[in-house]
Image 1 (cartoon, rainbow, N blue to C red):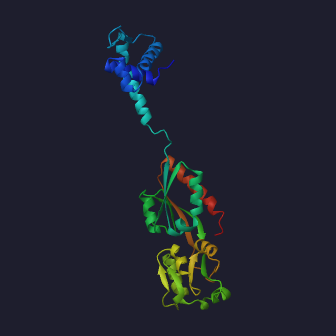
Image 2 (image 1 turned 120 degrees about the horizontal axis):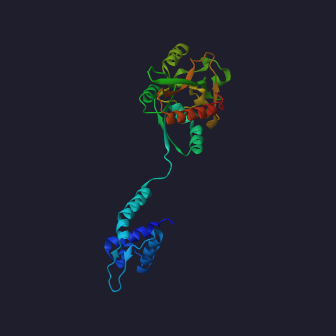
Image 3 (image 1 turned 180 degrees about the vertical axis):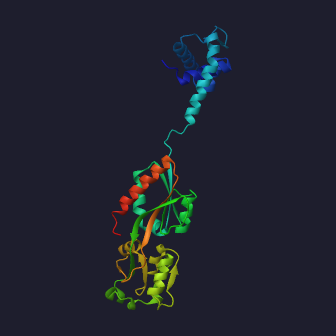
Length: 297
């Protein structure tokens, strides 16, 4: 029969205090309970541990008791260490750095599903510009990058996720929505955004007649805030424009007759990942691709 922790605690308390009464007071138990625990331990050990003498409060340890004191103290120390150990499984951390249009729009449903399916994974999302995302993955600040531009780094691996088509977002009752002709667009009502250099080159060529836009916003997530006026319009990736049309039925998408260069979303990872992190990143990518396959892009 194994020795009980409370019996060992009582025995050590008796050995240190010298009396059953003092040990009982220290452990907040009755003297009869303390005596019963000592008898239980003696039965488990098979040896008498304490000499009780009638009329003498102080007890004396037998030779067996003397030998047991350091062993019992060591066992109790192990119990204390075990109690301090956090036995909960350690959550794996996955840091994902992504472009604003992905973190703020397209991937929100995926992220919700991912954390629900994997409560053992601590997902940390960071939103940055694409060049910064490249550097963060190269420097191992982020485990996964989701970006629209690719920088040259020696330890960076990039794989295409999807190609996002461009659309012109406008009001349903606007002249352009009915005709589809660029001549019906007014430059002074454009909500402009700085995308890639290739896009800027295309924009200057295709809309050379425009002097200036209504406003230039810093991120694609700000487009919807300025589409309230009936004459407002903007050029946006379809992945951003579609949620806006779902939230604002007065807005519609039209494809330009000459589209800008493809907007390619890539997943970026470091070329040297440990086994555990590599499996985690691989699982994340696989589930992300499965989600993207369900989208109308």
